[in-house]
Amino acid sequence: MKIELSGRRALVSGSSQGIGLAIATELARAGATVVVNGRDQGKTERAVVEVVGAVPGAEVLPIAADLATAEGAESLRERAGELDILVNNLGIFGARPVLEIDDDEWRRYFEVNVLSAVRLIRLYLPGMIERGFGRVMNIASDSAVATPVEMVHYGMTKTALLAVTRGYAKAAAGTGVTVNSVMAGPTHTPGVEDFVGELVGTDLPWDEAQRRFMKEHRPYSLIQRLIEPPEIGNMVVYLSSDQASATTGGAVRVDGGYIDSILP
Ligand SMILES: NC(=O)c1ccc[n+]([C@@H]2O[C@H](COP(=O)([O-])OP(=O)(O)OC[C@H]3O[C@@H](n4cnc5c(N)ncnc54)[C@H](OP(=O)(O)O)[C@@H]3O)[C@@H](O)[C@H]2O)c1
Figure 1 (cartoon, rainbow, N blue to C red):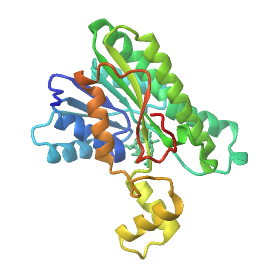
Figure 2: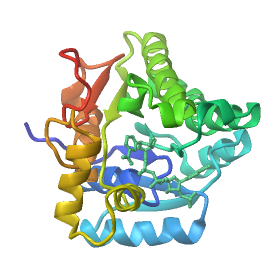
Figure 3: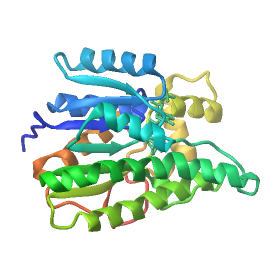
Figure 4: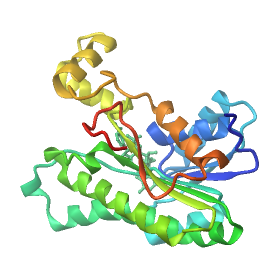
């Protein structure tokens, strides 16, 4: 299979670092024009430099917008124009005892992790349907189906994204537009590297720290290492392709086998 995304225009929300940046890079490598986004314009511009460094000649545009707000989504839409590929990657997470999560915090998580995706889908899906092609991907997590007790509010948003995905896929039935969730598992991002250090100590070489973290804290992972962000990018590239035309309305896993289930 040879995937070619030349001529396609993509947006990855929250892509000035981490998994989003890796997704943007892999989409650009496959030939797509990519809009990278974050709240900080300087950081989005540095992300563009990184993508072009990895993929010389790539067409990448930095658009800063706070996608936790309706105004931010509208303003991004005005500057980004129409899209063929929408990747709702933006997501915040943090540990908090569930009995201490107040109404405002529940709302904030819903607003940033779920409504940001819903708003962009509402803005972009009609154009995709009209043109008869579109690819929407919502980046979910193993936490969507295995609620982590230390961040129930985060898990709730990822479960919601699975339902949102299924619902919009139905709304796009028979149009050539697909809508899917990508369930990422424990991934090697700077935030997770710090988290590993906190749990197993910062004095170990990285390989040993990672091995110990997986064995002691993520024993169900079948790959027994963190997922590298481009591995998630590769799945997004596939789902963005013409070849993935029969995959819609579901959740695909890039979780290293972390969820103990025989269903996808
Ligand atoms: N890391 C993991 O192990 C893991 C596992 C499973 C799933 N996931 C999911 O993967 C996705 C990416 O995670 P990550 O760890 O790569 O994230 P991350 O490193 O925390 O990056 C977050 C990105 O979002 C941007 N951002 C934050 N708030 C924003 C807002 N209101 N509007 C626009 N942009 C905003 C940030 O830039 P600014 O701060 O400049 O705005 C940054 O570019 C999330 O949906 C997460 O739930 C992650």
